[in-house]
Amino acid sequence: MSKSLELAQLRRDYKQAELLENSIHADPLQQFKDWFQEALEAEVIEPNAMCLSTVLDQKPHSRVVLLKGLESNGFVFFTNYDSHKGQQLLQNPNVALNFLWLELERQVRINGKATPISAQDSDAYFYSRPFRQTIIWAKSSV
Image (tube, rainbow, N blue to C red):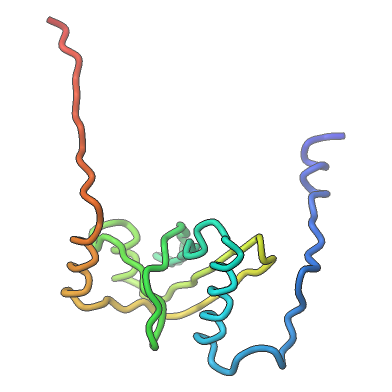
């Protein structure tokens, strides 16, 4: 059997839970909070890891970032404004988020518009992060 055929036959049957429309909270953010709490209780590894997708020049770009807060108007994550991601967000704020919690057989997809938080909140987060020292070394040929 070829490797590509084996790959094509990989399929898991997800039967852990059924998603019924009448069981969903009317407020999508509250529904996310409920599910996030379930992910915490299930000890999902990195439950706040989410795939962030941006679009620049009609080309999608995706990477995993960490959710750092939930507010009444949305999801909070941080990035360097000078990074590729930061520049893409400044040029086109339309984004998609995707949380994948395999242990719960659940994913959550979110579409929206990214808006910068206050400079004060951004600075406070930056200074709360652990300092990482860069070590530079070179071997002398003397």
